[in-house]
Image (cartoon, rainbow, N blue to C red; front, side):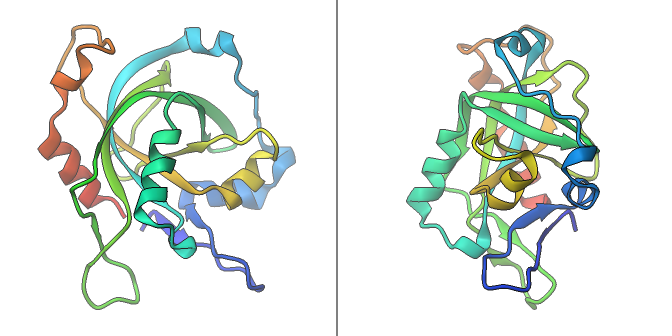
Length: 196
């Protein structure tokens, strides 16, 4: 399982954490390489269609309308991804959410799969060159809040974008006008159902 709730001893909420982020949390802030993004960073990004799911903090029990707002608010903002102990920055340029799809999940304490608040999506994402996807786990990106350090941001974020897989079947350059025609919606939904 890639995602779990991190338990704390006090009464605060238990944040959703990616197993890959746990290493950074244990190593601490001084071990992390974090070069905050600038306009210059945008020049080194390439457009890719990415399938994924938005995962709100389950412990905070956001209303569906608030989850939709969070998902759409991530568009055009810098998102951070913790790659071992280095922070990589990316941007969602445009997004096509599948609000009418129910994402199911199996967790360790429930006997049957149950509905989640997660939202499947396809997005036109600006990724750093060489950004690698993995066959067995998603890349977790989240909106970077400038008023706190990166690890506090991980523990206090509203949710995360699980970036599951890129669309590789097209070689023609992606634009804001043509990318939606290249979305494979059944594949996007299948991938979103698969990741937990």
